[in-house]
Image 1 (tube, helix red, strand yellow):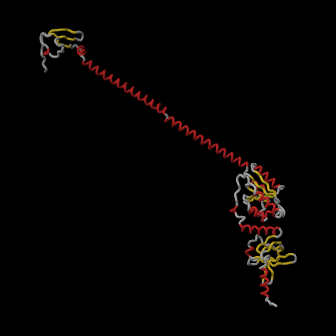
Image 2 (cartoon, rainbow, N blue to C red):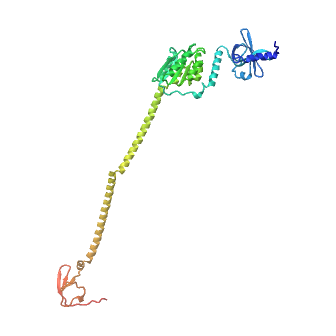
Image 3 (spheres, helix red, strand yellow):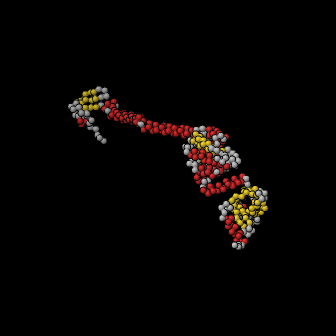
Amino acid sequence: MYVLSVIEVNAYVRELFETDEILRDVWVEGEVSNFVRHSSGHCYFSLKGEGAVLRSVMWRSYAAQLSALPANGDSVLARGYVSFYDARGEVQLYANMLQPAGAGVLHAQIEELKQRLTAEGLFDESRKRSLPLFPRRIGIATAPQAAALQDMLNVLGRRFPLVDVVIAPCLVQGEQAPSSIVQALYALYARDVDVIIVARGGGSIEDLWAFNDEAVARAVFASPMPVVTGVGHETDVTIVDYVADLRAPTPSAAAELVTPDRAELSADLSAMRQRLEAAITADVDARQRDVRSFEDLLRRRSPSSRIIRDRQYLDDLLRRVHSRLAYTVELERARLSGLQARLQALSPHATLDRGYAVVRRDADGRIVTRSEQVSIGDLIHITLQSGQATARVVETHLQSSE
């Protein structure tokens, strides 16, 4: 027989608790009672349910993360590990998370899956892909009879009627919905689509539970093309929204996000056409100015322009030559007139006109200018202003030079 001390028994029991796979991470639902927050910040309370009580504690670091502390009587869902408190010999829950019960159970499951997938990198923003500006073909995974599908088709037809739509029908609610959604996604992956929409209308958290399924999240993560989710209403956020490349608040909004607006495209094209026409007009005007400039340059440098300039230059030369000649002629005329006047003044006739006469010897016709050139008895001829006379020298006289 083994005899153990109380400490040894309690330590053995605590070791059993701590090595149990289930009790190391457990969710416990119950009603809060005897809730006390110690001055240290630690919280002590009990969880009651169906005639049983479980002592619980939440350390200050975890309590600080709660948006609100529970009150006595609140139904909560607590997550943590169960161990044995040696000092009191009590089983105790060491809680690290508290959520309201009911929907809180589902939220807790979502939170646990979200943390795990976050750690694996499924939500990383760095892997998010941008949507194609002008998709040729859009894939939609949703329930074929749902009003959300018709809403999306109406939006696509209004905004971008050129796009082709490939519908992969699937269940969006119920136990078979996750596998149905996964099959629809992989069917679209095999088609030549540019972007995929995963959508369903609004509902409760239970209605949208298929979109919080891990298999669906991993199927969205495996998509070779961008995925847009439009699940529920604006306030509904599911696991696939975190995995998808883009989340839309509603199915109709998802259809708007994946397509350009035809009206906006038309307005953009109109503005681009106006800018293009203005640019073309400005370019044509500039080209025409260049052509006119080149034409002027060609005219200035053409042979005909050179000939015209040379003709003008020749005309100028001719005018200057004529003017020079006329001036020279007038100058010569004036000079000749002067010479003529001088000749006239020196002409014997002028001397004769003044009453003088020219005497020549009869023997040789030489002009007699001095008396010693003739002798008495010589025959001389006298030229008068009018007519001539013949005379004989009868007397000569020498004139003194003084």
